[in-house]
Image (cartoon, rainbow, N blue to C red):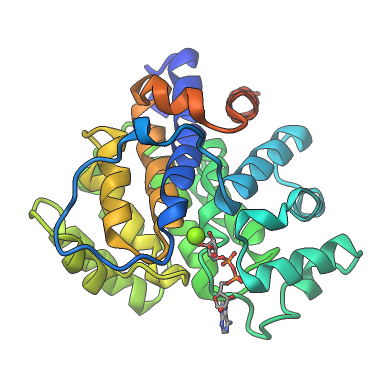
Length: 309
Ligand code: AR6
Ligand code: MG
């Protein structure tokens, strides 16, 4: 955070992050699994959706923020129980994580449950899609951010690619929440110890920024799939590309990508909201978001915690 940022500006960014994330998740969820559009079809129209119901992305992010606030920071046991107990089966959770969360509810230690479905751990983007509250809370301490995010990812997603995807998204949120210009984001993200696939995609994304890409180009270079490697850098690219544009434009383009639209949109919008603040989100979207007040309260509590001496 820059020293000149007031507390109310900070609260606006924390709310902007969580609310934009949930709104984008809800707006894009009905398009999950769609094919990639040949050309960009334009901004999402909030008017056509009377109710914005968030999916697993929003639910786990809310749980993360509430657990961080309640514990005054990260507590792995509490976080695991919160995610497990809050999980609503109707919100579209990934098949592996449903089983892992059920095992945690039944009392299995998370470190065992996390490797019970896939012995190498899940490489899905489920750890990255819920990580924005960590990026906000630990924005001023990069080392602590990486360590804490890795541990939070492991609760359900022990595979290194899932952990690194979560670290990339959390770092992008923290860069957005500070006033670091997007021109230096890629340098900072390359400094994380990520695998060669992420490294190559960060290079491609950096190259694509500033060019007028179509959805097919973005998907063929960066991906649109449920694995963390197939989506984390895509969302970072989306956030940078639309950082100075309306949220509806970002969501529209995420939907045009097809595939895992809700998670692509949510991760990108969380980054966008951490830079632009809640005042940049249209009232029609805020008014229609399910549990809007609960997201706002959680964001305020995390903001308060972040300035605690
Ligand atoms: N080996 C084989 N397949 C795997 C592995 C692995 N190690 N890891 C993941 N998969 P999951 P998520 C495949 O269940 O990451 C929702 O739409 C496997 O097919 O851990 O929390 C959300 O909105 C598995 O079911 O869930 C997210 O967009 C799938 O990847 C998305 O799902 C997802 O991994 C990811 O959710
Ligand atoms: Mg998804």
